[in-house]
Length: 422
Image (cartoon, rainbow, N blue to C red; front, side, top):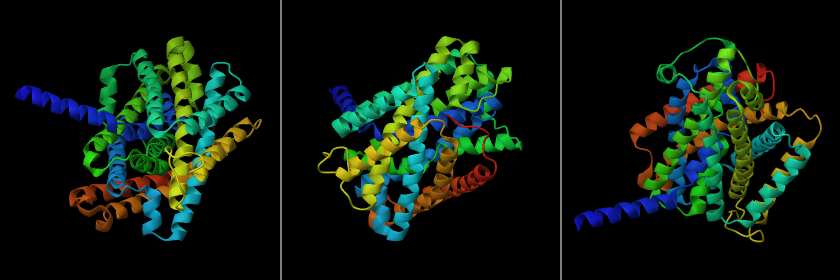
């Protein structure tokens, strides 16, 4: 009888966790978007397994930042933009929103460019593919409510399994891989340092914090369920860097020994075809398209969430178009602009992508400081403020991220990479 009660309790907890599951995994998964995949591909092809060790501290840093945002959403029932508007000046809020909106527009352009590039790998013309994907994105967002849309996004997350499979099919020397993962190797080579900064910088971005907190609020997760939500966040952060690990491993195993350097994810996919076979190429290319499509959904939704929250407009996937016109119109406009830019013949996308990196890099320190001030505000958080030990770790981690971000902005402005990422 006692065993039956315990079994029922475990089943109930499992069902509760599955009902909470979503925001953390989705947010972290989309972090491996078109630009992120390109960065990891370049890291593996250029430097082999030498940058694998960075994924351990990156996962740790990502968990710290994401956990604080999830906790704020559960405790306050408000999005990050809401809290910034209510606790900081209107001038600061408006400046942050303008910067975030511009950066996300450029990143959304990169996602559509990634879909176009992935389509070319399969011989699909971008003038057919991009309008089709645009209509698909609109149809899904306008017709699905949050619970259904979340299930759809979790389904899209399965695209990333293709990278795990491609990494396994590359048949790496696992002893060597684990050695490079556990024992850091470092170089003062300029290209190595720039790639190192790119690997760190592509993982922690401003939009992620806003989307995660807004989705926690949208889903109605309260502090009572927060233990399960925190587990969702931790699992998501680990999954995203496991995927990054296998992308690096695949390119490091197949391309690096041959001295084949690539400057984009599509170049990496093409290079894999003659060396690793059609299945590895296919898995890599499918994963790239899925990641870009995923980003084309999440980035506009994230942007619309924090703009509407910042100015007190109605927002949310659960609301109808009539009840939240501004929310949906921002999404439609952002995706339309991105698609139009990508369809312009011979338009140089690389400067726009660099601009997105620079704007994100400038804004991120302010966002991190705002998060730390809000999470320690007892009027907002009550007993759920950071304990002293976590505060020490959080401030140290944030200062480290700010320093890395500052260096990344400088190197991006003065020593930009030689070619586009997608």
